[in-house]
Length: 84
Image (cartoon, rainbow, N blue to C red; front, side):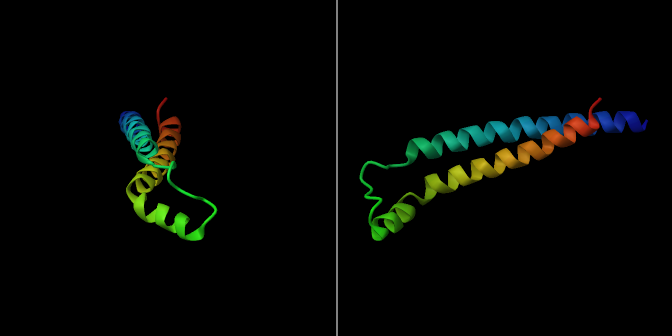
């Protein structure tokens, strides 16, 4: 009976890992496609600050994608531990 619980927990963590990595890829793809580097002068501090303010949604999407990648890795390690 405990083996069945371990297998079902392993399957659940594998599904979480796959879902999270898919969400991560989509979020990072959208974030990178939405960034506008063309008009930014990276030699000026005020321009860099303005870039971070204007591009906050794409940067948050990229950060969210990186967090999802880390969580996906955690769930994959749980899968390797629990699934036979």
